[in-house]
Amino acid sequence: MSRAFVHAICAALPGAEVSDPWGGGHDCWKVGGKMFAVVGAMEDHGVSVKCTDVETARLVIEMGRGVKAPYLHASWVRLPWGIVPEDELRERLETSYRIIRAGLPKKVQATLG
Image (cartoon, rainbow, N blue to C red; front, side):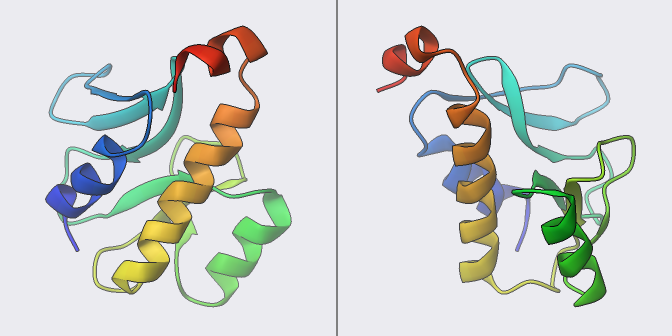
C-alpha cells in the first residue's frame, strides 16, 4: 500500500478533493470541505482515517491494525503501510468518506453526485 493506492481510491469517490493545507507534502482528502483521510508528509507512516466512533478506533488499535492518529480526535486512527490488507484499507477509506459526507448539510450533499 502507498500514497498512490490511497490516491486511486479517494479520487474515485464523488466530490473528493485533495489539498495540502499545512504545506510540506501532506495529502488531505476532503469531501464538502471536510477532511476524511490524510497521508502525512512522511511517506513511511500511513494514512489516517475517521472511524464510526471512539470505540471502533480503540478496537482497531487494540487489534494492532492502527495507531492513534496524531493531532486528530480519538475517533481517528492512522493505518500504517503494510499492516492492513488492501481490501480493508479500501473499506476504511470508504467508511471514513461516508461518515464525513453524511455529516454535511443536505444542500452540500446534493451537489456531490
